[in-house]
Structures are given as structure tokens and as C-alpha cells.
Image (cartoon, rainbow, N blue to C red; front, side):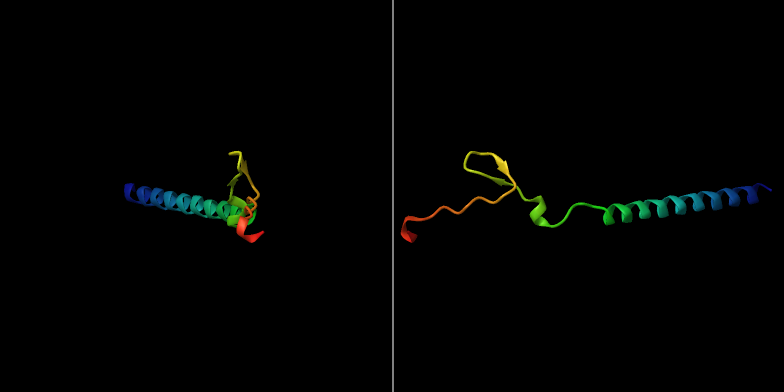
Length: 67
């Protein structure tokens, strides 16, 4: 009788483990689908001439030779 109880518990623990793993995979997939992230451009930050962080790239300075 002890052996059947032990195997029952092992099956229950295994089932619980699989259930948690599946739920975690579903949550991961849901986060992946609903992410507002994007590409590299959304993560880029620039520093302007005053040392402030901005989301727009700085303008290239004009060289004297090109005027």
C-alpha cells in the first residue's frame, strides 16, 4: 500500500509541475505578443550639446569646408 501512495504522489507532483510549466509558457507568450517594445530605434537615447538625454538624434554640425 505504501508503494501505491508514493507513486500516486509522484504522479500528482509531476502533473503539477507540468501545469505550472504550461501556465508559465502561456504567460510568456502573452507578454511577447502584447509587448510595446520594438526595435533598436525605440531603445536608443542621445545626448545633446547641453548634456541632456533626448530621443531624437542630434543634427550633424556643418563643416566650414562644405559651406
